[in-house]
Image (cartoon, rainbow, N blue to C red; front, side, top):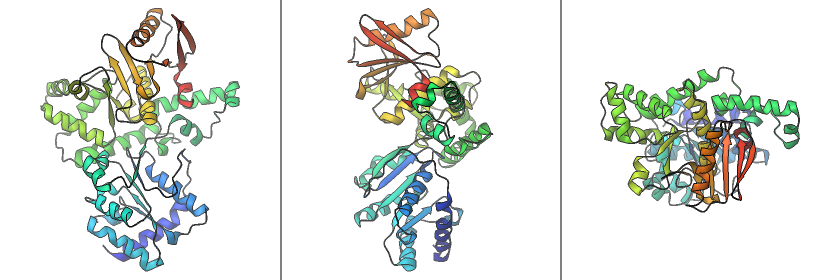
Length: 419
C-alpha cells in the first residue's frame, strides 16, 4: 500500500469530518469500549463515527490521537488484510502517537477480524462499521473473542427523523393544533419514505430510495455473491414485499419464482434469503408457537426500512403499518430471539417476551367485526401465555377497551413511535 496515498487520505479526512453536520443520535459511548456497528447500507453508521470523533475533538483531543479510514474510498482499492498494519505505521511516522482507530466499512477486506483482535489485544481503542451481518458470524465472533461491543444501527427512528427535520415533539408541542399537525405531516413522510438519514430532508425521496435499493440489490447481494439470475432475485424481493404480513416458506417462494420462468431450487432460494439478511434488507420474525424446524423455515419477513418496502407496493398501507411496528420492535429489543408472532389457533401479530406484551396491528378499528376479531385474539392469547400489556396499534385511532377486567390500549402508530 502506497504510504503517500494513505497520508493524503488521512489529511483529507481531517479536513472534512469536523465540518459534517451531525444529527446526534441517542447513543452513549463507553469511554474505553471497542465497538462494531453493523446495519443496512446508508443507515448512518459512518455518521456515528463522525459523531464520536467530533465529541472527542470537542473534549480537547487532537487529530494526532485519532485515525479515521473509510475502506469504500476508491483510493484504497485492492487493500488487503496484510496492508492494514501500514495504517498504524503511517500514523506513527506522522505523529509518533498511538491513535484511536475509526475503521469504516471494513467488511470489504477479507480477514479484517484478525487485525481487529490484535488491535484490541494491544490496547488500542477501536470503532468499526460494516454493512454485512456476516461480520458477526460465529467464526468472527470467536476470533474477536468478546473484545468488542456490537451495536445494531438502523435508519432514523421517528424521534430522530423529527429532530433531523427540526420538528418539536415535546408534550407541550403536541398539545397545540399547529404542533401536532406538523408532527403528523412529518409522520406521513416517514411512513411512506422511511428514515434513511441522507434522504430524511430530500425532496426526491423516492429517487434516493431507488438508488439505495439498487446498491443493496446489485452490490451487496448480486455482485458480492456472484448471482447471475438477477431476474429471479428481483421476483423474490417483490414477492417478499407483497407477503410482509404472511408466513412464507422457502418452498412456496421457489414455486412462485419458478412459475415466472426463472427456475430456482429451494436451496437457491434459501441462499438468496441468507444474502438478503446479511445485507440487512430483510429480517425474519418467527412463530413462538412453532417447533424449531418450522420456526426456521416458515417465518414472516420484514424490510429494514419502510421506504424500501414502499418501492414495491401500490396500495400498501396495511403492510407498511405492520412493517413499521415490526422494525420498531426489532430496533428496541433486538433482531434475534426477542420479537415473535403467535399463530396456533389464534393469530397475534407480535409478542415481546421480555416485556410480556402482545400487540395487534390494525389499520382501523372502526369496523365492529374487525374490532371484535383483534380484541378476541388478544383475550384468547392471554389465556396461553403470561401477558402484562396488550396493545392494538392503528393508523390514527386512540381508545381504551376493557373486556372481562382486562385493559387493551388502542394507540395511533405515530404516538407509539415517540413514547
